[in-house]
Amino acid sequence: MMELKSFNLSLFVQYDYFCPMEFYTHCLKNGMRIIHKQVPNVVAHAGIMIDVGSRDESDAEEGLSHFIEHCLFKGTKNRKAFHVLSRLEDVGGELNAYTTKEDTYIYASFIKDYYERSIELFFDILFCSTYPEKELLKEKDVIVDEINSYKDSPSEQIFDDFEGLIFNGDALGRNVLGTEESLEGLTRENMQSFVDRYFQPENMVFSSVGDMEPAKLFKLVEKYFEHIPSKGKENKRSKVNLYTPQHKIEALSQFQTHCMIGNRAYGAKDEKRKTLVLLNNLLGGPGLSSRLNMGIREKYGFAYSVESNYHYYSDTGLFSIYFGTDEKYLDRVGKLVEKELFKLMDKPLGIRQLDKAKRQIIGQIAIAQENHAQLMTTMAKSYHTYGKVDSLEAVYDKIWQISSAEIQNVANEIFCPDDLSTLIFKKR
Image: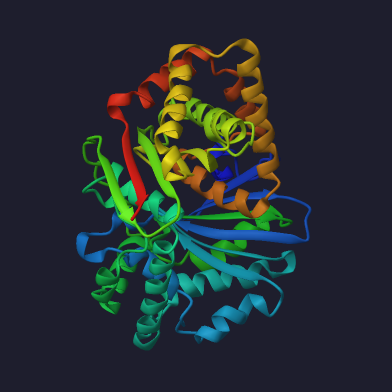
């Protein structure tokens, strides 16, 4: 189902250094930004978001950002790989990282007493990693296994392949993992060049949720990161290519038939984005009472899994519907999906329907914010994108302001049959 982080929990209003409000922000002299939420918990969560992902790779660098993320833990000028991994684990903490199309995250969860230990480790990993040749060869094999594991799961593979269809010919459409062939050509020199270009303080946001006084936290980050020189090179991305709807059927060895339907959608700064978030949640979001789930699974039992998703990037987005079904039900499920889309296009929501949809997503946002590890990464992304933080009350107010007419207009733009692409995995 739709990831809770897609709700964009923090739409951000800027606060001053010592503001007694919910979120605290600070910017180092070299351009690195910090955002912190103080909570009275024993466990803290902190991480660094770097504004670079697979979208920023050249054709010859496909899969490089994800490869680098894996190799950040393979040794530094100060520590061997074992000591990198055990630095937080020895005190019960957890260290991890992941890569998306536009971002790289390194983050940790730990007892609040170990803030400085975690911050120093982040610095060591990001700016002192040595990328040993022996470790790079091993990690390539690990990533090839990761790629093959996706191929063994068509219900996961179809999401990546569909994005490739929607953004055909653009770096945004490539798989974050790269390919076995592209990985083979990546070298230590490629990695170091990429890191030198993008791992700059002005492209980074340090985010934290934990029981630490803001002033103390800012001083700790300054201690380890402020001496890193700024190169004054923020990441500027090229425009995504033009969209042409496409329809594709592939034959795979599998039991189920898998189908994706969708369209390009709004980017992060488009005012219509919040309306589509609400519309998506109503249509096929995480709730079992979504229209697609009720109209297809619950009413007819034609599909075990049916959902809709909306993911936005800095300048564009993707709306999609997924379902897995028996091949004999493929056409019937397709028509039922079409029926639900036309309902939203043809007739505005009634007052009660709209009220229910808003209350549902507000409740989901409130619950999602209780996940402090997830909140920490969401804060970083939103602070980077919008430069401000909204209170929950402000977020709720934006939701209550969405009208039925706005929902209907967005439905007609995104669900227009002539603009929809389809990808089907059929049984061979």
